[in-house]
Image 1 (cartoon, rainbow, N blue to C red):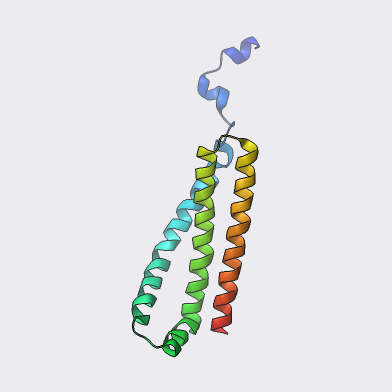
Image 2 (image 1 turned 90 degrees about the vertical axis):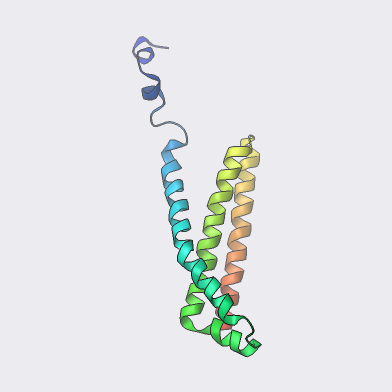
Length: 128
């Protein structure tokens, strides 16, 4: 170790290294999706209450209304994105093997994207 490097404070030695490079962006995305989920969940609970006791045709009409279909799609998209971000944090914190961690993150992302796409296509089929 050279002499000028050994004179650095521990904070200066690690500044710009490690997960802090992308951690803020990930943290910010997770918080923004959580905030976005609040009105979406309220809308979804309202829809569920509205559909309580409704016939199949009435429930279909409610779900196919453009505003409700849009909120359903946003709920699915934002919900899956929030879940992906949260599961990634869990894997990064608790899976020590880097290769396994990377494989699990990719598999979870692919699975979640496939489920989100299937859900959105199903909503579109009902709405259109």
